Length: 631
Image (tube, rainbow, N blue to C red; front, side, top):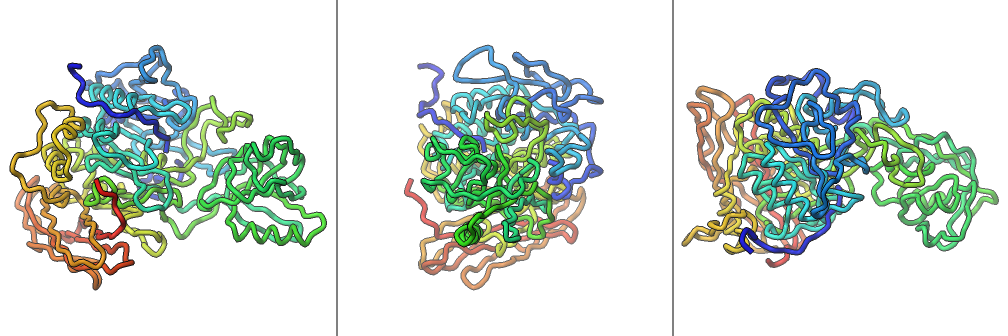
């Protein structure tokens, strides 16, 4: 049919802050460009929004920016939420009101107003605020009860671009990356990039298993989740006085000396507990559980073995999640005690000196679609984040839970993404004319390096360039820029044919350049450099790069140094000195990486750091030997 660019299978996708912004070094009194911050419009593709939250008050805000062309369908907007639409596979008359909580949470993290004295029943109490409290929000509800359809995503991207948003926040993803020409996020974000709109997306929640990172297109930002220095802990005190420290957002009163019991069938899943009663007891769950099974079985509380010990979940009954070795210790007490009992205490906040560390659930690289592009790009707070919620769903998400709140604590790369979106909006407020690639570069090259010893499993493959640093991102000094043609050449170099290319770009005239040598993604002017090496084989790869001076208006000189190359690879930069004479001047250099990784060595990393004596522009390099499927 005329107007149809491509056809691919529809998929379903999953949804993937008091302390966090202070932890990132962006306090309430941070330097701001208030007039232009009010001109920034962020499009939220999520589960909608709860408009009556104090986080979305428009007190003191003027009318929407003149560039705004959007609309409010079945929704009453204000000068904070200036647009709202809802999509569900072509249905009309839908409400953008948030019935799940996820969309309100992410939107308030990006641009929520300052709200004093909030928390969840006293846990994580403080002042809630977004990264850019003065920015505007446009809401595109595309997810319903954890169901997000491809066609709704594409429709929302198109509308958001036409409406006039400056940035798009996309806390949605699959369990594995898919080729760009079948990925609605890659297609939609390409169209956004073409119109000057950056898409910030979650990296995925498929745990620290190599190659699960999603949202990997080089024209969109992929954000891993990391911890902040506030950790939420809960305690189980056994009858013998032994204290087991675990995690959960337990806002119930203390459960005092309840009998401990094991499930008869060894599982706490609802179907396994059907017909059983554990009334008044603390049910010990050796496998995973969201609390539904113990709740239905009448348990007074539960203790759950969880392979994500760094996250505090909200459960529908008093609960503590613990590690397997702690569970073994509890079993030893139960087996040698005639009447074993335990007490579950309410959650307390503690200081975490190890932060930031990458979340146990956060998806990692390498990038299986484009191994020469490092993903995730960076890490941002995504563990135990407090933000706005909807009164239409319980805090635990369990329909039998009768506890509702205006603010809730949840975790995920979904929570990390809006921190990056908010920072991108913050940078945009100072530099309205910057391209999406320039904003991405500012965030990536100013990220704070993370400690690989505290983040086992792949270094930069786990956390990208490091922890988001909003204050430094505002003034990066140099940026790597790229435009539509650059990405088209990269996709062609990856082996995509013209038909696949048109599916991504939507342009009938799109074609790969004739006669161009198909080298690698290394040619793309990306802020980081990645190479997939064959174990035991010598390699040499060159990364041509160009940086644009966005710092000093006059003469400035940057000198390169190489950090962390080690004995397995050699890194050379030519030239090592870049002398700029004017603002927005662009100068080129080449990074050459050579060496060999022995069999069994999965990755090695280094970095090129440009400095003018004040600013530092850091570009990580990673060489890995992780298996990558053949395209």
